[in-house]
Length: 498
Image: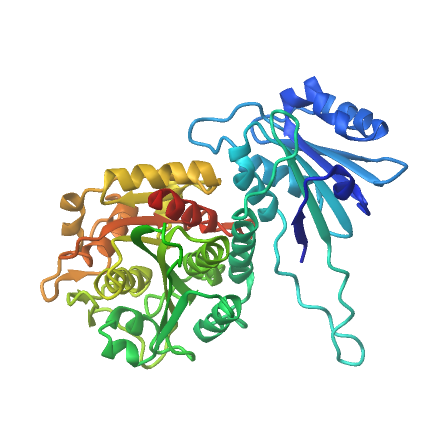
């Protein structure tokens, strides 16, 4: 795994570096004045490399050997403009050029980031972090049956300069956000042989060990039923490891903190077989990533605690393995939820919303959060609605929707609103014997909006503002976790509390 550090000194950036990547928009390379901070041979090589590159719409990288230190030089040329629904920091283009150049994968490397605006710093660093996943293949065993010697830990130094070509001072919130996203991506990458609800809890405990101002609670197994959470219990009750809800609350000590309590609720299905409505024809492959929402909430909570949250924040992490077995929930079963409402099961593969429904109700009714944001790999329809780069956003409040949309552009974790219209969607869940079914009657009627509305329904009778992010497609890219959601939630909490 690559260790990332920030610096404001060119000499410190290049010290011991075997490879250097220079990342800048195309127009900045054409001007070239910012390269005066490099030794002249590197400056000329960088200009020559960049002159031959057309970044297109998403950036392009190229490299060469230098014949001196650093031994390798690469440039990442970014497009000068992006669309209004992209991040102005060009976070995805930065991720792509870092990945293309392989910078930071081994040895000691350095990246010089050239930014149009100091406010782009966090999103740009998020792009760097997403190109360098933490999870690695287990070491092969030697002839003696012991793991082989691990390779030396790669090291990456990063320096950013602004439009005035002066080094930028990293805000104290940057590295906690980058680290949180990389930790979330690592959790998504862990195979289900190693990550179940109990193991996820252990990871969370390890991550938050020693954190001050944090209260911790775990509701496990049949205790979920006693607490009224029949949804989480029902989904996970037949798995080898019991389902559970983890509840962490951070209360800042500063007198100036905002008088707001924001709860982040994450879906954590550590593996989704579909239950008795079994996924077939390869549909189960990749379902280890169905806990991406829980990973995002844990990463964001860790980031906010470490970087200093501006208000009271709770993380509600709903964990279960949707397995098959003698005690599995069946189609036609009826579950009683934390909201007090009942749900008739007509599709055991629509399980994530059951976890979230209990989670948001607990956040509003038990924790008394005034704002509840849930995030989940919830529907395949999300990819059709908003694609692979934008999560689907639903909010009960227009101001909340606008704030989170802008938080996405600022953070680089993009979202786009989809319809919020309870009057059009609740009839899809009509049941003759319960308050609602858990899956829609018409799968062609705004399925992602319907799924979100199922969750929102369980907040009826509360005053909580609600937002939902469906991240089914942004959570994974080319079979690897992205850490999507951590920067978005972290930024949203800061923006909402300001």
